[in-house]
Amino acid sequence: MSEYVPNYIKTPKSLAKIATCTICLAILYYTVFQTIISDWSNDPDFSHGFLIPLISLFLVWQRSDDLEKLKASPNNFGIPIILLGLFFLIIGNLAAEYFTQRLSFIIVLTGIILFLLGWQYLKLLAFPLIYLIFMIPLPSILMLKITFPMQIFAAKVGAFALQLLDIPVLREGNVIHLVDNTLDVERACSGIRSLLSLLALGTVLAYFLNKETWKRALVILSCFPIAIIINAFRVSMTGILAHYYGMKAAEGFFHGFSGVVLYFAGLILVAAVGIILSKVNRAQGSGRRAKGKEELDSDS
Image (cartoon, rainbow, N blue to C red):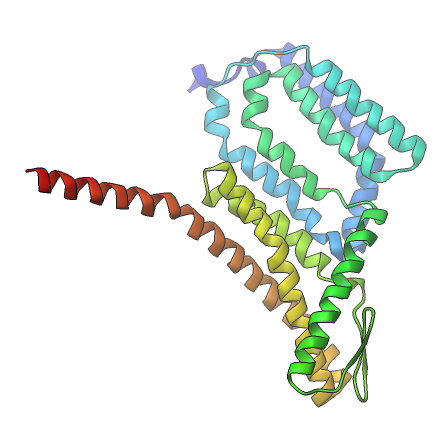
């Protein structure tokens, strides 16, 4: 197997380059990763961030056999990409904008791979690199623009479901008024948490279940309606429980348990979309083969 070991691992000079880049990255992004880990730990909307680097490493490991067979071909075009990433880091520091700083890490890492290893390595590692975007929390301004419409939608669906069951209800924005209780569909109940984590895992499912790009895109896009619908269903069930059994029953064990159950239900639905799409071409191919066989039989 030694002939398949890349040259950059064999030579001390190349190892020194990798070690230098690793140390520089650790120094440059130490504070950045302190803040991002703090966000993962303290903001439940981004707690899935802990899994993203591990999944990305798994995706790299899955390609280990192919990586071993490649020959390193350093490309100087990686230098301007590294400089672009460092520019993003500087601008982000000056503006105290975390998203730009964190995004710069992926850009710099991309440039380093291209500079040290070449295009073939970058092409093979493109998906694990792009996947790291899911570990970066969205900017607060963007989160507000996304979550508020989701809150309103969940409140509308919840109120509509209660009206269908002849439960007296009045909705004001994201607040649902019942006879004896009031439900406030807050940011935590908007479904953004399920949507972000479902997108992260749904992207991996799309990658493994489907080969064609358009099918993968459809699976990823399906995460949006699925996450929104299951969250609206959860709000509706909470309203029903609050009306018949009180807020303690609605906000107690059921509230947390239903979130977990419905999230896994959403994940199953995304996987089902991927499986169904993966069989589309197979069914068409089988149909064409059967038709061709019938034509041959008729000719004979």
